[in-house]
Image (cartoon, rainbow, N blue to C red; front, side, top):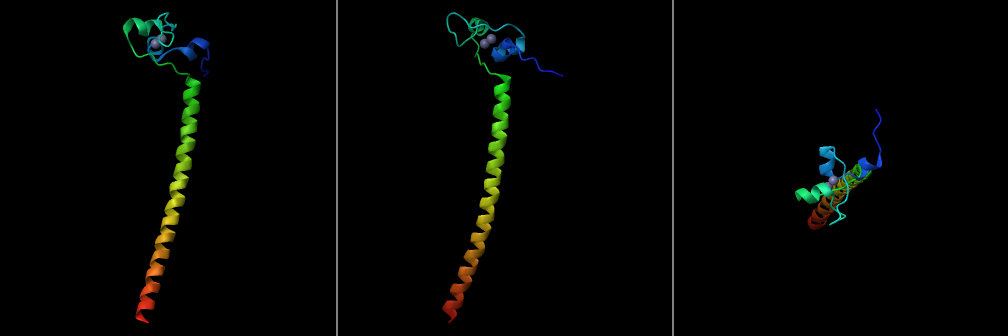
Length: 96
Ligand SMILES: [Zn+2]
Ligand SMILES: [Zn+2]
């Protein structure tokens, strides 16, 4: 299945997309389309391609953070072990 990549599909706002109607910027406010302006709706335009890219990017960020957390967790365990060793060393010193 091929996804249509016409210019209108890319520039349609969320409302027009769901209504399957044409989306054209209003004269009064170019950031808001005619339909949204008339109905006083929030006009959000986004490109599906952009959303896909954003999802890919966010997945990458999540993966990186996950790796970071794992590595930090390892470090924490190492530090805890070190702390235990230092504490046991001090008890030995105190005993002597
Ligand atoms: Zn629209
Ligand atoms: Zn709109």
